Image (cartoon, rainbow, N blue to C red):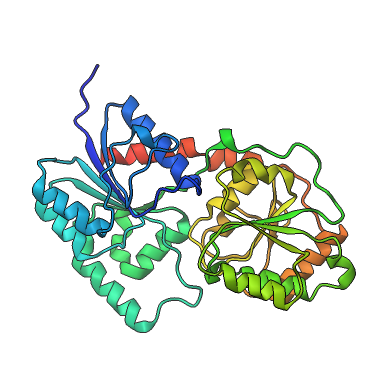
Length: 362
């Protein structure tokens, strides 16, 4: 067997929860497996240790109650590990953390940006701060990865266009094998809807509640929208549903580890998000042959085409969302084509893993 000198560290601020297995978990499992096949040693730095799924095969150094940046810096100072590559996920870009890494290691440093941007943009103070951080600390980063073209553009906008030559896009992908596609025809009149989302204000589910509120009573009589997910905004959403007397329309299902098997039982995913990077829920839904009703934020328009595999409405436009729902419920609007093929061809987890392995040659 050829000896591969690559020894990489992955620092990922992503809590490992058995109750919430998502697209990133599948990516980490597939990436680690491919690294094993290629004789690449990987040290994983997560907030916590886990053994569900394939995590029992990982070499995890948990941060526990310490920040990941502090934990990794301490590890470098106290251990003898020498890395060929250091990769960060869900870690703030262009901070002094990266200059510290470069003082301690000769590794190539790659940052993967999963962060959505606010709809109205950053404040002037924050924009200036990010630009200064870009000038100060980007020189310690060898490659910036955006998970969509939107994200790659945002990196340049935030930190400076001088980073163009070391910024590229690697799309997020989904694990197709575990997503059961819908094979029956979508219901034309009064179809079934679901939401799959972390329940926070920026996901815009409050807009969906308001849009349903203004629907005619006859359209609401049989309308069911199942909401999968949990989060800090859950109680406010439940209160809104109660205030508008929509308890028969919205069912809060909580977090499920097998949502990939449940999409097939629905006809449309609704994602009224205000800010997004590149939505794995949208990819999973389309992979399950379920069209998407969503907003044009983040990378959504890079995968959803209006009237082809979903419907697009302007962010926070409750009237427009209500109009789409009305037309879909009545059968005046529908998506008839197969939405899975696009995801198979362009946004599979195999493609994502291949591209992430390729960048280790920098």
